[in-house]
Length: 111
Image (tube, rainbow, N blue to C red; front, side, top):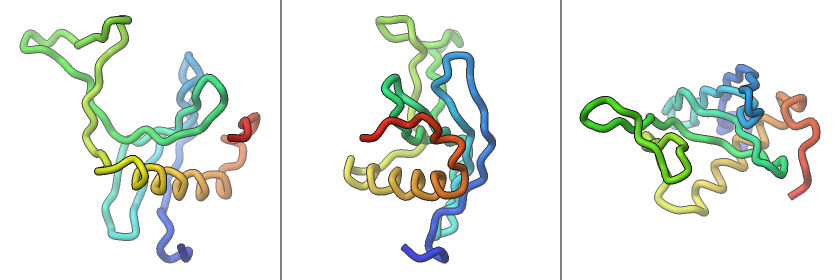
């Protein structure tokens, strides 16, 4: 991928209390599509991944939905048709972020 075809990223570093969110992202794809409210996330073993925009689920009474463990339920607003396509996209975003914001990858564990 050439730099002209590269995904453009606006990054706002952020750390939530749980430490699972590292930054909020706006992604501008080469097609011109802009994805707002993406997040750079970190898993329990240090793996970084991109969370696409989603909305909290509510029932007809306005009560937030919860799973069996009490965690909020979310509905994806954008998704990929296959896992390989998602993984390729995620790697492209992470590559740009590693180059432009290496501080967000301090302590990253090799995969």
